[in-house]
Image (cartoon, rainbow, N blue to C red):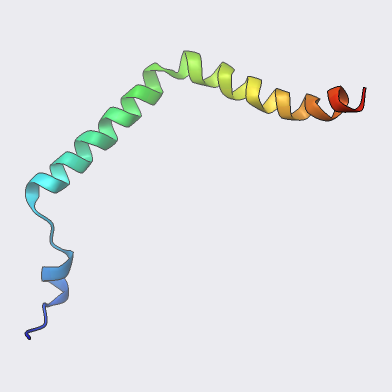
Length: 58
C-alpha cells in the first residue's frame, strides 16, 4: 500500500474549498444583518442568568 505525501492528504477539491468559503460568508452575513435581533436576545439571556438566583430565593 503506498503512502500519500502530506501535500496530497491536505489537498481538497476546489469545489469543497469554495463551498466552505461561501457557507462562511453566508453565516457572517446572517450574523451581521441579524445583529439587531441577536444582540438584545443575547443580553436577555445573560440578564436572565444574573437574575435567576434572586427569583429562586424569593
